Length: 165
View 1 (cartoon, rainbow, N blue to C red):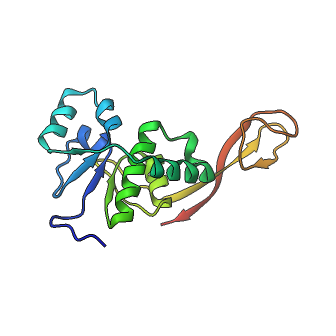
View 2 (view 1 turned 90 degrees about the vertical axis):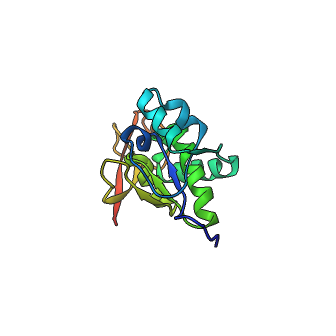
């Protein structure tokens, strides 16, 4: 395990900079988060925090996408969400890190990847949700797809089960 001179690094999504929460230790984000920041105050906060900007590695993006496909979180996650989860996964495999986010879908996916989370200003999720698809016509359940292969009706995402934290 890597020993950090400072407290473990934080991986931050845009909510940290929007809320302007101050953290002890190093803060890392990805280029797509920086691009998302439209508010001048949030951009200034990012600059004042001396944030390290690192692109996500493709191997970790692939791992996040695969897991999100299994859990059905992929429909809720943006490209930036995938990037930040990939960076957090990379650091969590090196040692320990905390992902700072207020996004419930990102929190849900992070916990399923074994990444510690901390809200920037909002709430932390109470349960990890697993999803599945149900046909709006014949009510059969499927693991994937947008259209029922049996009757041709649209599939709707529903909660399969929740795991209490």
